[in-house]
Length: 369
Image (tube, rainbow, N blue to C red; front, top):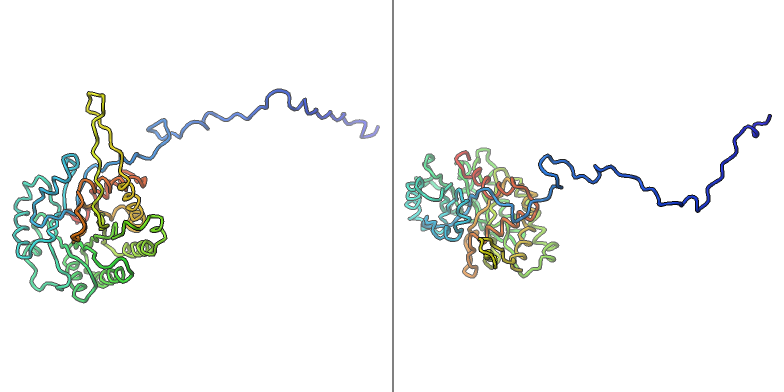
């Protein structure tokens, strides 16, 4: 018998109509494909926190300028809502007469225990161009005094005297707040600042901390559109030099109202809801100016956070000094809201907000610093 006769007959291929009888059977997916991941806390997909809901648990203002030591003007600016979360300030005596500084420091230290606003540190004027002091004032040598005294100075250009003065302060273990007033619109201003820091921190005995102001955000012109700022040489220079500054140990930056030729846009107050007897409030629509400021601020926050991280940025409410006569002062409460929203809209976590607005200032100026 042949092999071909032993094979079963080949079945007929179904016709086109036979292949398409009835609806097509789609594959069935398990229910787990439509179930959100189990986070252990919610049955919903995790969402980023709303910028309006992301608030620092407490606030330490690392830059409050009050030459006489009187905080009443600042307290009126922060208001009751913000003031209730203030857990400390760094009080700067910038602008005080040299002969009056010692007396003001003594008054602050003698009344610190009864002050309604805890003072974390007192920043006294210190002139870099005068070089290292041969006979430091008594308030700099009294290490046990509370609140402690730190230094506040203005930098315009590097010089042997300025390098000597900063090196002396750092070897004494002092914290120095440097208001950068060099020309940051050109490379020479950045290079001069980096020269000062490089030479002043060369000694292994330079254990003090440095806090830079007028860097975040840097001086800028509001007339330059943001779309052009992205590719502008000034912005690219800012990115590069910010990364270079972050390489210095014990260097922090203040997050202050910028020198942009205009005050911080005011924060609209919430209005009572109409048609309801309850104390509900409806927030007002944010102004176009405020939105523009936030977009610009976030452009500068990004490179700063990438370089320094959240642990080396300190919130402060007083603008970097000196202010020009044509620049109106910003309100502390307005700047806080703008600064907080700018950070929150970057999608940061709660611990980052808490670090910038309180914990980092404690690390720099607190008793354990």
